[in-house]
Image (tube, rainbow over all chains, first blue to last red; front, side, top):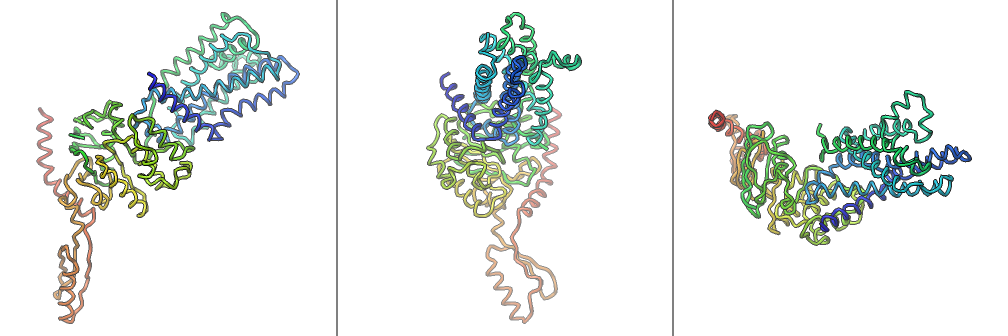
Amino acid sequence: MSAALALTWRQYRLERRMFWRNPSAAFFNFVLPLLFLALFGAIFAGSQEDLDVIVPGIAGMSIMTTTFVALAMNLVFLREQGVLKRLRGTPLPSGNYLAALAGHAVTNTAIQLSIVIAAGALLFGVGLPEDWLMLATFVAAGVICLASLGVALSHAIPNFDSAPAYVNAVFLPVIILSGVFYDADNAPAFLRDIAQALPLTHLIDGLSAAIVTGASFADHLDDLAVVLIWAALGIVLAVRGFSWEARRG
Amino acid sequence: MRDLHKSYGNVHAVQGVDFEVAVGEVFGLLGPNGAGKTTTVEVLEGYRLRTSGIVSVLGHDPGGRPRALRERVGIVLQSSGIYRHATPRELVAHWAGLYPLPRDVGEVIELAGLGECQDVLSRKLSGGQSRRLDFALALIGDPELIFLDEPTTGFDPAARRAAWDTIRALADLGKTVLLTTHYLDEAQALCDRVAIVKDGRILAVGAPAELGVGASSRYRVAWRDESGELLSRETDDPTALLHQLTSAALARGTGLDDLSVSRPSLEDVYLELTAEAAAAGEAGIEAGVEEASR
């Protein structure tokens, strides 16, 4: 067991090192959500109501970039380059490898969320989270959901050149619809209906309750359920179609 | 390695390939592109599942990709990427941690000829250097058996020589090597035994010299005699023959029209073998039908 953990840890450390040496990946994962937070924080300065929306919204977006976006892009790249195939020829078990990759993504999520929450408390008057347990539950559910959906999306992307197009085609509409930048309840009804079907909307609702309003966990179990349903779907799709090799032709 | 044995049903890519590689042997699969070499090797490596047949690699069925087998095998794929932001030394050191009994990192870097570029990011390596890194990563686990899929395709002559030296060094270490190539001279230079593969079948197996692959050391001398007839003769000693021909021509006071000296190409060997295979194939097809009808 400890040998398996050590192996996963080694692989995890390699993934961490590679991440920081690749400026464009680091930018997409780290700087972009924080840049949005700074920009919208500045725009909404003085309006606590809007700031209370943007902080949990960016927190949700951070979870999505560090898991969904990062894993979809990363896996397509590693698959197309043949790194996955090469690793598959070594004794490293697939489970340890995927655990290391997931651990790497979750580390980014944790760092990113810490920054967003700290900024919310120190700069934007949102205060520290009201309910830490609820926060942890929603973050965990969101990570599982969006990470598995990211892996699932990577199966649909034919090659690395088209990866940004595929990823953004999903990512951008979802963050806009799900109320990252505004209160989704104020959107027109048909957009609200679409948003209600998306996991990020419910994740942000849960985060908002945990960080800002302090509404009771019991009132948000339906949000958690939607996120978990998407997570189940994502896991099934991620495991089915997983390919270690670039497509031919 | 004992008893690497593999046969397929009548499947498109590989149709009834059957061979055995002995411990410490350098065995080559020689054939043109699309002959089924890579498919065959990838079945042995565990990347592809066979349709039928029996395969044993170091006593394991590679189909289930047992970890115990992966620990004893080194793989150089035809092409495969690597972490672009890591140096060869870091990568070799990392790979060492994936195996139970790795070789020394510095030693492998030397053996693969990565000494001068060990601290360069892998994305800045040249094609030849990347290939050397492939070798190093396949060697670090101290495998008993090494698969090399087209190890020198696309190399310049100097890089090929360097790669050959590395492969010979592996053989000297007592490793078993299974390589694929479409270069006749490569098979000749490196392999103890060669299987000639075409259209998913093995046409011949044997030491390069036995196979007529060795025929490339023979020369074909062609010329036109006094009566205008085109003659040709094969010889191991073209100097003597040419001397004979030219002195006779000088004595006659005539020229030697259409004089040429050539070596049989891989194509000649193929053509010869495929012609033989076509003839022998009749019997094989009948046997196959009989077997299928049972």
